[in-house]
Length: 281
Image (cartoon, rainbow, N blue to C red; front, side):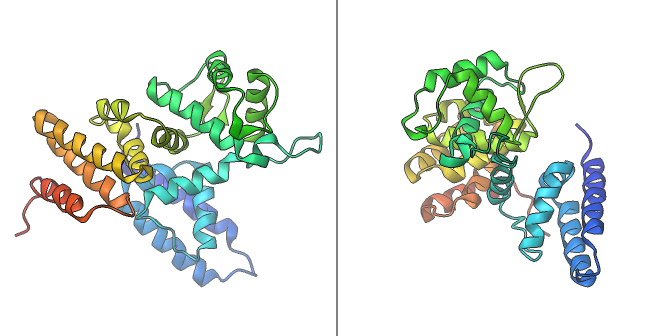
């Protein structure tokens, strides 16, 4: 994994290149310059943003979104940023040459299929998924009442998904991968939030590679499940001193990403995290 400094430098170069390409006689160069400077400043101070913007595809998506929002990218809301990325990649490819609309584009089926594959990969700690395993996972769910317009065998459904979406890639070594961990985390979090996966999340809560997944999933949980997750995170933090600080600070980020939290729970989580902060002089 490149250092934060290297990621920030790469991200800065890609952002500058994107804005250079956007500078035309019709564009307001001063406005673009201000937007770019503000974005670069945030990337330099936020490692999680640098990691996203250091990828050319994700950088392009987020710069376009930032432009549409007139420089108001919600950099303090990683859930929305990941959602923007996921939404852009679900059906980014044009309709097939047959002229008919993509099946997934009709009914949101692509997003549900991507959630299934990402959830399987997260739970099994996989970065690359064998095509046979992907087809088997899809076959186990067919027919899907919610995907009434998706027809055919699991292999045909998978082939159509690979043709329609830009979220997946086919590495030279074989199998299927998501184009970036952030994309896998976004769709995987949607899957985990919809299923009873608290045990799997909690068993991995101390692992840095699961930080974003738990953060994203927590934001989408219903209040009872969210409250249970916070309670069980606190229990783990109390019983495992080597992970106490990490888990308490993770819980704070989960609370910040949740739009509606019981005030008493939020105060309790913040008080736990406060124990780990260095007092200001």
